[in-house]
Image (cartoon, rainbow, N blue to C red; front, top):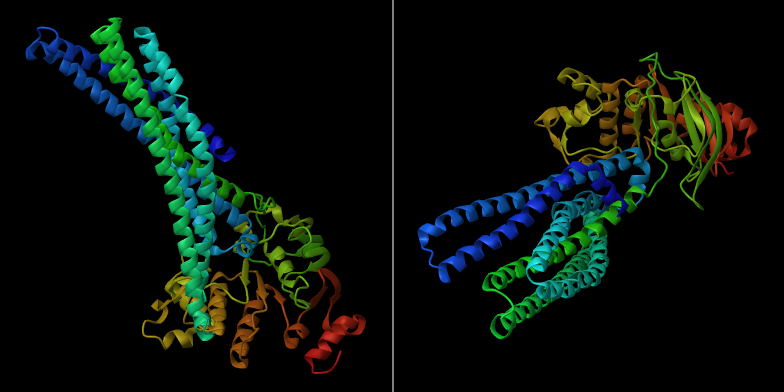
Length: 576
């Protein structure tokens, strides 16, 4: 709710316009009623003919045009406020995912996040485009009508004041249910979206293990759950509409009965006043009824906004960047880790007090058992995770002082499973370039990465399309495509996260040759398991349970660190 209020405060000018349009609409409603009563009274009770009524009809037409125009402009202004709010929310969510990329990828399902980014944000729009304009109109128009009615006939005004509160009271009761059910619906939609995307991505695995039919039943159950949640909201909405209509109908009936008694029995009211009130009464209750419909949308929007707010506050730690630029553009930075610490949360993995110096053009291997913090340290070095404590210095300045684009232009990060986007080989390689890459540069990068043989065997060559997430490519081919990005970018710092794990010897040899070429002009930091990769490193960082147990060359660690020596012994086929 705070987010919605903040958005409204940003749109003060447009909110003022909504108030102005509501005042114009209210004035036109009253003017329309007056003109209708004058025309009908003159036509049926007076001696006026059509010619006498033409001026009044002309004015009535102008009033109707003004009323329609003010309603249209109010709607347009609301839509503009809604569009601005949608843009702001989407920007905030994308910024959140951008500044916390690792947390965003490991918390929740991708499909669920897409559902919040698209569906929940779309749901919020109705709060600004219909609910807020209607709240303003339903606050001002009934008030103007009440003032006019009280000046003409106090009894009718009192009936309106007594019956009108039943509508907002009922709306509040219904609204609480609507908001709760709307949140449940969004939860089910996010769950359904996430599960459906996971199923599509893992369809081959499900088929291989004979679980496709069971997963189909799970998706069907999730789909039916979302349908039922939607129907529950509609049930509440229809009940709300029925009750609002009932209250309005009874209230107008009471007013009509009271006016009839005054006209027929007591002769306490004129035809003009009675007819004017009968025309204004439906307008009074219609405005409140429309607020009821908008209130339903508003409560749904509040539920969606709550989900967005939860997503935006999931991580308070953002990666911050400065405005500093590197003096040596093409030279690898001199990196120093000073008491670097990171925690994923309370009672979760903690990386603590890492101290190390990584000189330019050096080859560094990060080694340790599974779960010791190797990938976490690599993410910190890459600038993909915020530090909990300590600092990483690049050329003597904290990493957070540099421009984000400046840092990432010097860096290439190649993980175990590099992401391949839906597109051509050329488009996927060109992602690695900070500028518009030429065809020749893309081809040269592909050759250096050792993927050109595969490309040339395809009918369309570099213009061959690959599926999303690299469908149709083997693990080694994905790695070579990622290396081609690095060759195109020519980074001065390259981070590898176990790049040769699970590859056959031939593919591993091709990758090792490509990595060797890249290392000629860059610092190489590798999370490594293979012994030959570890042995060839200039410096090894050995991690145990989130702590730096030792650092040095292979020979130094074998001699001084029993845990490292035991790991090497296992790799060589001995016993620890």
